[in-house]
Image (cartoon, rainbow, N blue to C red; front, side, top):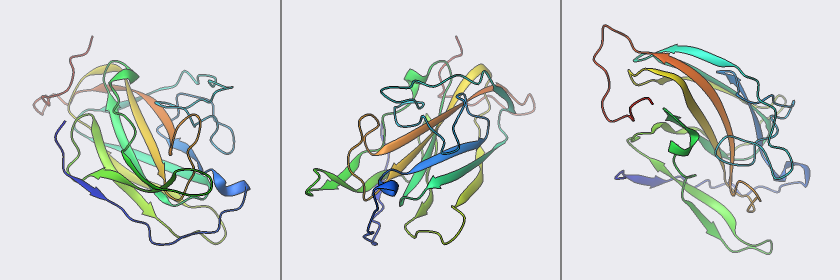
Length: 205
C-alpha cells in the first residue's frame, strides 16, 4: 500500500507512575461492539480489543449510518498517555483492517520504548483518518474527551467494522497490543443513492 508517512515526535518526556503506565480510552460514539468497563477495558489486543485473559463480552449493537456522510466519533481517555488515534473501516471482516501503525522506538532499561508512530498524510483504504487528537500534555482535572466527524465512503454493508486505534508514545511494549490500544464498532451502512458508489473498497459478501 502506497502512502506518504510522517512521524509525530512528542517532545515532552513524562514521569509515568505505575498506575498510568498504560493508557486507556472508552469508545462512546459509535457504540462499542464490546461491553466496556469504566476504563474502557478490555482493549489491549488487536484488532478490536480484548486481552490475553478476557476476550470481552459482545454488546450486539450495530449502529446505522449513511454512506457518503459523516460519522460522529467520540472517545474518552480514562488514563492519560501521550499519543494519537487512527480510524479504519473493514467491510466484511476485521481481518481486512490494517496492521497497527509502524512505531519508532528507543532503548530503555525496560526494553524498547515508543517514541513516535507513522501517520498517513493522505489516508488510503481502509484507513479513514489518521493522526487524530495528537496530544502530549497531561490534562488537569477531568481526563480529555475527544470528538470529531469522520467521512464515510459511499458503500453498502450490513455489518462493517470501524476500528479506533490509540497509539501510545513514551510507553513500553504491551503483551498483547504492542504500543496500541484498540476499540471497534459495528455499522450498517446504507449508500446515499444521490451519490456515486465509492470504488476501491471490497465488495460486500
